[in-house]
Length: 88
Image 1 (spheres, rainbow, N blue to C red):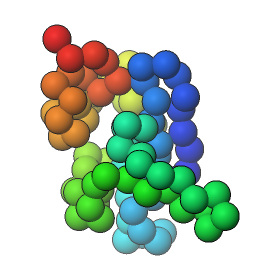
Image 2: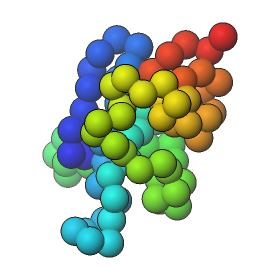
Image 3: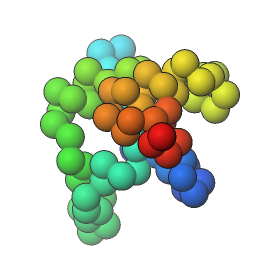
């Protein structure tokens, strides 16, 4: 986990999927977190490694105000709404 947001209705984690040149950063909804093991410093989510690797890449300049990007994330994660929004 590289960074996180704890805004109400818009909580997320930014996760690095690999090492340096071979990975990418993806945004995961906080609702995917199922358990946190502080002793082992691990976060468990309800997605497979493949689902996370196939997720849309995190774009620092788009995640706040780009509605199209947030809709793409919402579609990928099956929220039925733009990422961070409420289903209609």
